[in-house]
Length: 420
Image 1 (tube, rainbow, N blue to C red):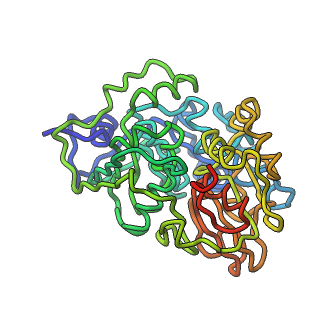
Image 2 (image 1 turned 120 degrees about the vertical axis):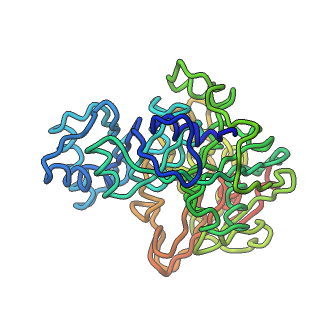
């Protein structure tokens, strides 16, 4: 019987020939990632209390990205703890204030197909876009991983999510995953692996695919994954990864899936998720005329170079509506530099965008992008739960970079296809 790419990775990581759904296996971790909020001040502190060293400093990556660029005592305290712990423990791979961990990690060459990785953040599933099996874990589990280098896993069932056709101009991976959220709900795939495939996925850029696997967390999945192809390898090569054979990490033709689901990419319209859940997704036409105080282009799902390019396509030669703030926080400093070199950042600034530092703040209600009392916003982030991006009285809609940019121009939720 054939194996899925996920089963092949779990079998390799656990030292077995094959695994099947329901098996309990102990996997050796190829890489563990923590950030300033989830790492040194919690798991690092616990390890120190126990007197246990990190199992392998070559396999630990610490990235500061949450409490960065914020002039508050809390932020400074978190950063001081992170800096001091990394220095005192001689952390080899400490990436300080370069951008959002889920983008920085592959961008700096730490992720490759076939790896089994854990991250102390729910959106660690992003790495699945590169054919890696990466899961988000909590403080207790990451502490155990940092001490021992292994973790037990119940082998998940696999769901084959085929996106057929080719997405229309103005439609992106964010629309695909919001459609899935809307159709299946935020617990639609509890503890399953969602394997994205099909012509629609093949037609996406390798960066855009990261949004699909990132938001696997929003449909209850254990993780999301995409088998590597030529686009994957081209991007990884640009990011310094070499010596990988994509053919080694493909699902077999006779692999068994618990479910097969098709999303019609040809027919897909831009999606918008209303407050206060990603599963409140529907066609953008059903949300037109919602007045906006703020539009935010940022986060691990909406401010990569490809996302900034999408926004620039809409904004070129246009101006942000009076009375609407348009904030842009490129996901990493490197992405911002690449966008600047292409002229993308100038298009955004000429349109009236306010450029913010790179980091996670706007997604979790920190910094200048925090919504005000009773404010209504639209955002390229991945969650719009009550109180996450601002006070409980604020309301946040989720959408693609195309739709966020179009809505900034209109001052209300707008269909980007009308502006391209």
